[in-house]
Image (cartoon, rainbow, N blue to C red; front, side, top):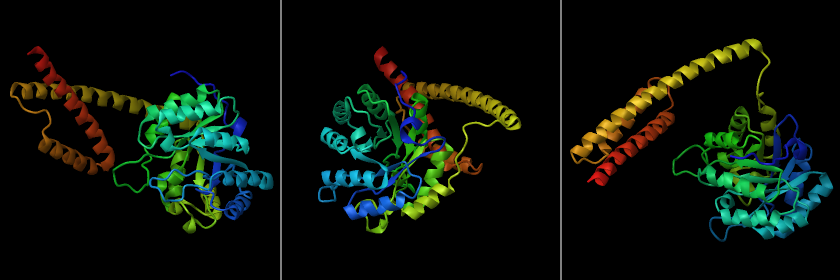
Length: 365
């Protein structure tokens, strides 16, 4: 994957040697509301004041944003409190209006990232602009769409780019509104190490009591900032009330965070770490060898099934195997969800190999 032309975040954000902080209400509701929140946040160390002007709602009839009038309010916040301001854009018209009112940063929401046509329309509208653009991950866990959106914005000549990790929709019942799936943010970082990634703990958590935990997890894996929805009276918010915090609570969350270093100069630490990493390397080789052996056995099973005209998927056996492995792992203090995911992946590959054997039999016939 080719390296993109990206301006370092500290050159446009003001956040140097610390996380970028974006805070403000989910939605701009009234001028009094946004100004009151801005007054409180202006006394804290935030880099951008955020407010949703256009709100994509699942069903009609819900509050869908105040529209252009809210951009005037954000401009007033800039002039009154000296805060840089940002909002979400979903159409070329949104981009044009936001630039007209001098909005300092734009972001593309998860529902837009999922549609390459919409992203391209926004990219075309951004041609010639010099504004930071933040791109949220798509609703579903598809890094290809996330990467594609970043590449489209970069191709429009935007160099001040960051990604926003806001978690993923899932049918699974979890503690979170959106499953974090941190590995996808890590994979994006591996693909584009030059692009900063900002975490959105509000949309991952879904409830304010989980925001500190999610924020700390983001810092622990080295993400570059946080976007936290903040409201003077969260319970009365017109949208996403449960996941917003007060300015005072925001200050408490930020003060509680432990910011990790990327590396250490401690010689003893580095020596011990290298020793443990060598042990990990050895164990990983053992795992690969065991997986290769297991897949060879799965192929032999596939041959027997083909010879005896038996389906590759044996549901009773699979249900027994999965539960048995989870139970064994639990006795060793391994996480149930982790083991379930590992064996689901292994089983998927086993079935794939056995289906290939079946298909080869059809071709040869």
